[in-house]
Length: 112
Length: 118
Picture (spheres, rainbow over the protein chains, first blue to last red):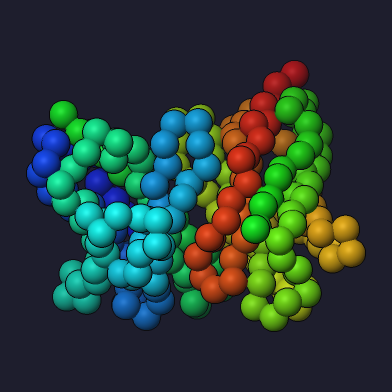
């Protein structure tokens, strides 16, 4: 079955940039959209990027998404890091072969 | 606006069947392209997609849990029900329901914590 792999954690200082990867296990990650969610402790996930690189209107443009077909991965980049960006981030896509929804294992972002 | 809320028992015993209800507003499950999914999250662990039912009654299940799950909808009541059989302590988790109109989940309920213990 299709899987998405994320780094367990990343950390960076306020004002810096952090990038989280999300690597597909098989097939082409570009064949279905990748979405990114932010989850703060005790809260439900909220969307920060949908359809690879689109931002909901309420999400600041410090958040951006991209796809790299050569590495079969998607990335979420957060620039100008703020302490409020500390959270868990999950990528999610769709396994067309099995018609399943798939989440990555999540990445904890720490703003030092 | 779209809202969803999960309800059900907070505590179930091992081997019992869990029944969770997602009550929603702001959309209709008879609208083309709309679906409601269930996702769970064990304490301190990652999100796991469980099941999804679509506007056209199509049902999809996680391959690893398919034999234990059943998802149904009541369009007139704006509810989606998830049943999970043979509960085990490893099924202890917060269970979320969420709305989709494509392949992402754009609106989520607050989640409900279910503990499996004797």
